[in-house]
Image (cartoon, rainbow, N blue to C red; front, side, top):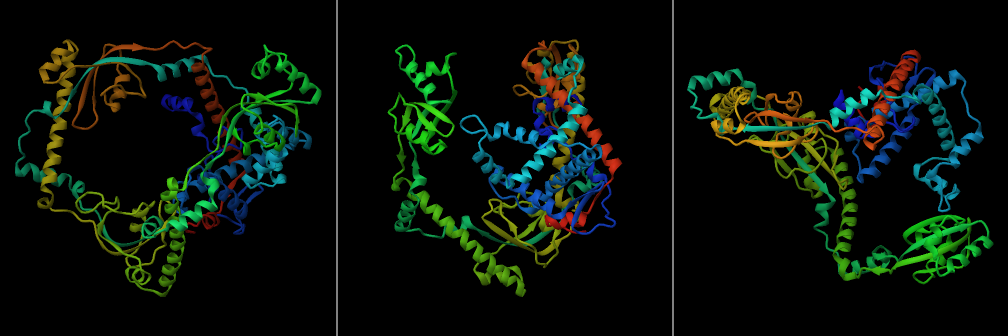
Length: 636
């Protein structure tokens, strides 16, 4: 439990599923233990909580919006089957069910908020502040467009969030963590240990005699499953990739030059200026400030930092002209000489004094420098178009019937035949099959398919192509005879013998270490003594194996212990020589981090219990068929 708390206090945001309710609670609670059989509801409903129905279209819209946000974050398409495998649909529906339960409770309690309070909260949201530091209607509208919200929908969602926050705040708004819990977490997270240790490996195991035929036969019989041949499948693959097609497309210098001239702005880095502004309500105040700035002992920067400054001070930093939203201010800033201050300028939000510092002039990358890049981009653009054309051709041919190999040949695509591949992507030699396309879930798709049947194409990882596959034949899993795997059996037997000897030797060595200096003990077994001084539970040091840390922290000071090392053929014998718990100042940043993390965990626990109780009280049902219809999965 303490390890979980340690991780939570380090980054508790990683534990969250939704940001709608206070941005801190994981509210997809126990949803998948509830009834999944709908009675009396149509296919237009995905789930129902109390009297609230979650419609198919509403869920589809939320799910698609969430997918688009994730795609923008990762920078590449997320295939539908990968999204299903990650359980994104269940997270989304769990969140919506939890919110619906909260909304039902709010209606039962008769809670509401006046329009002016909701409007004031939106106006005060820093997200919508413009360059003046005040609410900016244009910025507000632009952000809503980016999110795909209408103003009415956003206001309704904001009102709902505020009401949910009222409920949550009354439950978990004021919570304190006992100091003893903070101290325990500090000990667990920050305790340091010093130790002497030695490592026992195959060299310390001594000579392992060759096994007799009887020993090998017995060892094999007891472990036949380890040496069983997996199921293999022969499969034909057809890959249609923009990357591959682009390599066959030649772009002339003339076409590249036309593209350069048509999109020259892409190769221009615009002029940037260090711009500092002060906004005043009136021109008189701006001129008064300018007179003070002109005094020999003042200057713009000194005035901006002085207590007597009037107006709102904004340092825009190094910006191009396009990033200054007020046209009048932008024109003036880019007309000023470097290291000079403007006269008062009438802007959107008042009268502005500008100061321009450093200036970085515009730079243009010449055609010769970008020609290769341009040609590659043009080739990829044409290749992507060709991908769509060939995709349609092959899909049309598949509608007429025939094997994948035959149909691919008709449209000019090559076929890659893999004679044998197992579920992990390995061949009969145990090595990964080479030159496979980079696609998600390919191996599982191959082993879920029937021999000779048509399968849906899979989008390749970069999103610039497709992969078709057809299972030609299967070779069932079988027990291998001893003669076929004798070398592997002997190798496994030998490794087991070494591991057993090392474990026994580690126990004997630990007993000696209790009364004998480590240098003498190490010399006796033919290894060297080693030392570490600052091991932590979550962080190793030097060559000390990480999976031995648990044993170290379960051993008291001056105690001796053993642990398996990085593999079964490595054992560590150690003595704990020091234990240090750094003091924790209750007012320090570390104490605050631990306290905040534990407080958030307590809040989450309380809210999870509250939501689970709502679920039980209101009742919740899920229409799995409708859910799978939305995400493109099986309706079974």
